[in-house]
Length: 251
Length: 268
Image (tube, rainbow over the protein chains, first blue to last red):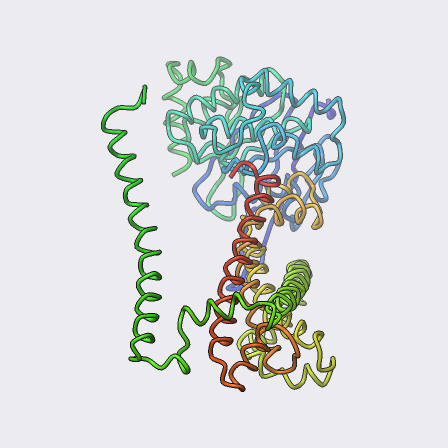
């Protein structure tokens, strides 16, 4: 059953040095995530949620402990992990299609087959006709979907979403998170999602992990007993129950 | 006019009228100044031996056969282009090195600041002794003047590249070279062209200063020569040509920017 765990974090600690002292960001974090699961991480602001994702993505160094993605210890950026940020970071001098190919180009995996796959994703998720357009011609929600496809095109085993929707306005955000949830479920992508938005965490995740203030430890992990799409979940009678529970824990 | 509302048509007309007024005023001011200059020197209020006059400048300009004006223009033009291309090329490359290696940058920073503030013309005699009193000295002077500014300007641009875009590239495993070619350089095309616009003007300054010091040809030489033999018509005509040349070179860079950005950065 070990193989089922796409991501396994054990005893993870992280301290980093700043000019005015040492900051202990994470303390003894341990959890594991199964294939196809979407896990939300919430916690008080500045608690180290993003640091945790950066370490899993290989962008920052851990102090001790272990992070295993798809059976391999993380020791730098690796192709099993896809990472998405708050900003879409599309390059305005490239058209949409070439933006989507950027990740593949950087990884030197820009094969015919992968290009076809990227194109298929664009078409499947309603962006096919925008291939030749430039980012400035797209709405915020569309841009964020392009950014997601740019990451998915590299076929990551696990997707990390770092406040990926928080730069969008509220309506777009609801719509994009619905779209993204559908894409993730359909493509069977495993995802870890950091957010400060409790309803967003409940509506998208299979499990929600609550972190304590810095240094962050795991306070609790809740299983969200709902399987319907995000917008439906928000109308579910259990929704407010989860909200109150998480709200209590986070404060 | 179908499909345009009356208000829209009026708005466009007003815009056009404003633009025409500005153009007219720009040309008008020059015309009035020239006419006044000519008029006052004709009635003897100003001495056209000292001040020259538009008609005398024109006569000098048309008398190209006698004073080899075109040869001099060609010399200055080539020297400026050589200094400009060398200064900008080396400057952009040095900026890459400094961006690449932070230690090198931090160590060289105070030197760059001093070199930037130092009037490069003060190096004139040194340059002449080092590279010889000829065109090479003039080109080195133009290079010296445009180089440091280009380095600082372009490096600032590189350093100000959107951190989040670099992080995005890193998340795909990009190494430093890939980050530079795919993110930093394309992000800074506008910055680079802005520095080229500054450096073409500075190169011209360097060339004229160099020609004052050493040359036997070029517009700078003509100006110095004209001054020494008190031919103010020649001095004024050279300055006039120089102004025109500066404008054309600047416009050349703007044109190149338009073409190159159109190819490399079509989304903007």
